[in-house]
Length: 209
Image (cartoon, rainbow, N blue to C red; front, side):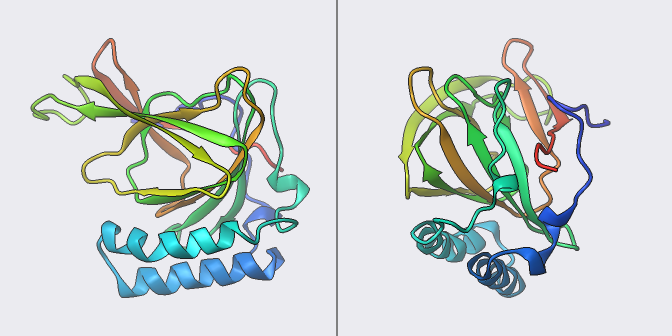
């Protein structure tokens, strides 16, 4: 199935994807991630190693992210590419969330590590309870736990089973900035229609130039 854009057109990768242009702390982080990926195969082992490193990074991010990493939008949460590896095995995004901006219910098909730079990110989790006879239809989801991740917090996930959730910032809360490390180039993810019990792969756009 082809990928359908969720909000804006996908922007071709530019200087945001150039490793040498990144601040040294981010280059060191991504170099360490590449070494972890070479040593470990299982997603659970990768996030076990990456999560403490990402937590240390959260403490020193002030001034590291550039203006084009922090683009926001009045219409939707913004996804700003920081780096995508040439082999497409890793990507790093900075996301900016205004009050009332949420993702749809989705999974990533990848491992990931997420850190909160500013504000507080709300996460609503879902549990798949059907027999899984079909991957993309006959899906039954029930609501799971809720997390509120404050600035400095780090969380991680693996793809087996699917990490199904919805993230965002409620109305009345302040702007939130988060940093997302993924185990692939996150050009799209799986969107769930809870009423129809279906899952479709859809493109997600990059907001920064």
